[in-house]
Image (cartoon, rainbow, N blue to C red; front, side):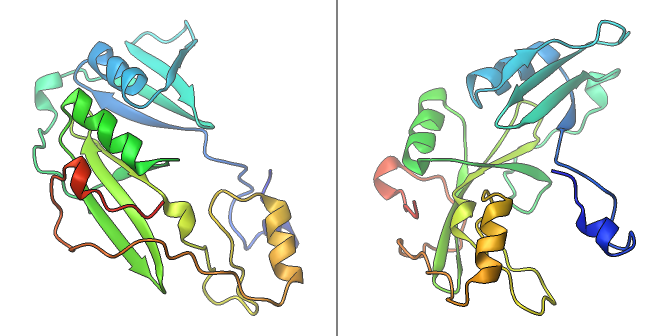
Length: 201
């Protein structure tokens, strides 16, 4: 869906964008990263233009693409060991945080967990690295409404809802129901066991 609001405001609303297409990641080993993004995150390899004269791979799932680019000098890429939730990252919504944790344990992938509270609504977050130290987040962030700043009538909607939900919110005067189904955790990022899982799902 094209951002028609920009045209309505005489172009002041930003570029006429439609959606996120892909992100590109420079990696030490395309094959190692390809295994990670397919086996861990469930991306599917797709055809890549044959005219490219450099090594790489294209993957797709969840409505976005991942483009892997082979580093010209793999040894020059910085290494990361500490999992810092404030680092650059890409975030994926999930259906079961418990299932995500279980799978990460099976694969032996270190991770840390956060639980964020805002207005009685709680969001679970799990952070871990890909083979090159790029941060991945898995969350149930759809629990948290999106409220544009400075709006005359605040528009409150879940992140994954489509344009129809926007019109429904604008036409309704009743406030959205708060989602609060978990107990907030410690703010310290920790490695957690399945028994210690804090579910906000």
